[in-house]
Image (cartoon, rainbow, N blue to C red; front, side, top):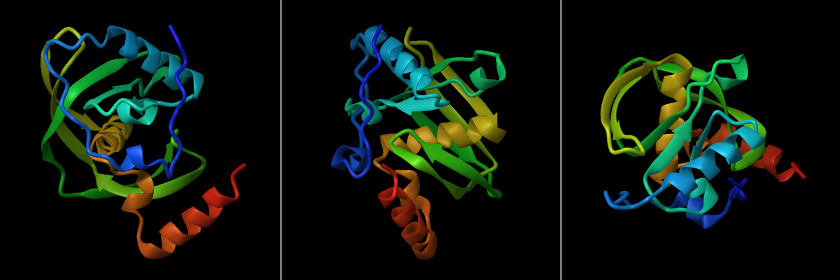
Length: 165
């Protein structure tokens, strides 16, 4: 498999809403490459648009850094429900390296999706998994973490990112 180049903000493709994946598309190579890329970059999630593929697909493995692999593939995910309670948490993004930001997100999120074999799932995610799923789903809608910040936090983040080599 291969490690793919990761797009860096402000690449305009990161602000593009992605197209649905068609049923007949064979994505096995892309999915394997995305996992290789995510692990190589020491990330917990990676969305297809981050590697220049404008499709509604992302991969996550929230627990691999703790020694427990739990890789998941999300194709054409959709949010079914979410908590009204927002929780602040620190997030980093492989497309905006060198900085992290504090983002308020729903405490839990219920999502439907299919996997690489076409199996349909519905699941409620909480904690770090909920944060990761919502972060990656944002990428599919052309949203990066910087877009979730208020004006003051955005100005600080932009300055910090400008200082990253």
